[in-house]
Length: 572
View 1 (cartoon, helix red, strand yellow):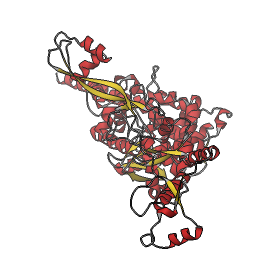
View 2 (cartoon, rainbow, N blue to C red):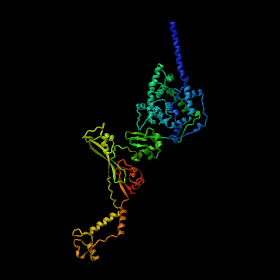
View 3 (tube, rainbow, N blue to C red):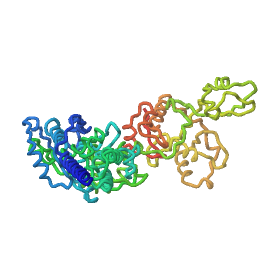
View 4 (cartoon, rainbow, N blue to C red):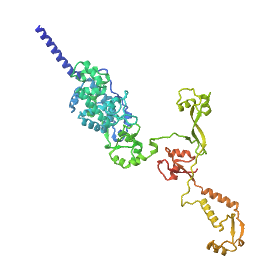
C-alpha cells in the first residue's frame, strides 16, 4: 500500500514538473494560425500623411519604399527584445514575429508616420505614466490602439489615442458630450489611461494580464483565469481561452516596442523634426470659437485643431466651466493680451443667444409699406362648428389648431374659446429720419430759416396779422433809419406806404429751387439694429445695398454691430 502511494506521488510530481515546464516554454513556443490584427494596422497612411502636424513639423522620408526589406533571424529578434531596458517581460515566439513582420515589411509607411507623430505625443504619455509610477514602455500602447491618431474611432466605438469606450471613459472622469470629447485630448486621456492601467495591475499583479484586460476588459480575463483553473497564471497560460482579438494584443504590444526601438535595423527612416513644437496652455472661461482665435492670432485653424482635438465642433464652451486651450508657447501670451478682441471678433456669427423671442413679423419686401404680422385671435366655438370648418375660415391647418390649444381629439364644445395664430398684412411702422447734425449744410433748412427771419422782420408792431405783402417806404434813407431806430418809437405810417403784392417767382426759378430741395435731401436713411441682426441680413432688407456700402457709410471695417446701434443706409 505504501509502495502504491509512493508511486502515485512520484507520478504526480513528474506530471507537475512537466506541466510547469510546458507553461514556462509556452510563451516561447506558442503558435497561432488564426491571428487577428488590430484595427490600427488598417490606418489609411495617405490620409495620415495629410495631418497638419506631419506636413508642417516633420520631414517625411520615403526611403523605406526604395530600400530593401531587412529581415532578422529568430536569434536576432530574441537578442534585441531581451536587450531593451523594460520592466515588462518581452518574450519572443511565432505570434510576436508575425506582428513584427507586419510592421517592418507590410506597414513600413505606417511606422514612419508614427515615428513622426511620436515626437509630439511620446513626452505627453511618458509624463502621465511617470506620475503614476508605471513602466515607460506602456507609452507604446497607443501605437497599437490608434496608430497615434487622436481622432481614431474603432468599429466598436472606442475613441482617441488610448481607444476608450464611452462607459469606461466616463468612469475614469473624462467628459464626453456634443462639444467636448476628452478621449481625444492627449493630456486628459493619458492621465485616465495611466490611472486605469494602474488599477488593472493592482488587480492582477502581472503586466501581461493587465494589458490583456485593457483590451478586452477584466471580465473576460477573469473568466479565462477561472477556466484555466488556478492562480499564478499569466497571459500566455490562458492564451487560447481569451477572445481572438485579445490573443494578438500582447504580441502586438511587444512588436510595437520592438519596431519603435529598432526601426533603423530594418531600413525605416524616421520622420525628422523641421522645427520643435513647444506648447503651453491657458484656461479659457468664455465661450469662444477656434476660428476667432485663429483669425486674431493669425494661426492656421488646423494647427489649433491638432493641439486641441477634444473640441469636436471647434467650440470651447468656457461659459460652462474653464477649459484648457493648448497653443504654441509664443502665442499663449498673445491670447491673454488679445482675449477681448478674440471674443468680440465676428461676435454675431458665433454668439449663442440666451433669450429668443418668437418672430411676430415677416419682412417680405423691405421696400413695401406693409409687413406680415403674427396676430393671435380668439375664436368662440359656435354650436355645430367643427375643427375643419374653423381651420378653413382662418386659412390654417386642423393639426395646428389642436397643437395651439393642446387638443387631443377633434370634438369641440360649444362656447369654448380657441386660440388661432394667423398672419395679417399691416402697415409698416417707419422710423423717423434723424435731423441733420449741427454744422452741416442743408439748403432747405437754410431757406426755411431765412423765410422765418424775413417774416419776423416784416411783422407789424401793432401785433395784428397782416397779409403776406411787402411794405415799401418812400425812400431808402427812411427805411434805413427805421431799421436802426426802435420800432416802438417810430411806428410805420400807413399813409406813407404803398402795399404791393409779393412778386411771383418765375417757372425757371421754381424748377431750380425744386432741384436744390431734392439735392439737399439726405442720401441715406437710418436703420436701428435689432437683436440677432447681422450686416448681411440688414443689407438684404434694402434693395441694391451691399455690406461694403453699409461699412463705408458708417466708417466701420469689421462686421461687429450691436443691438440698438443706428446705421446709415445709403439710398440706391
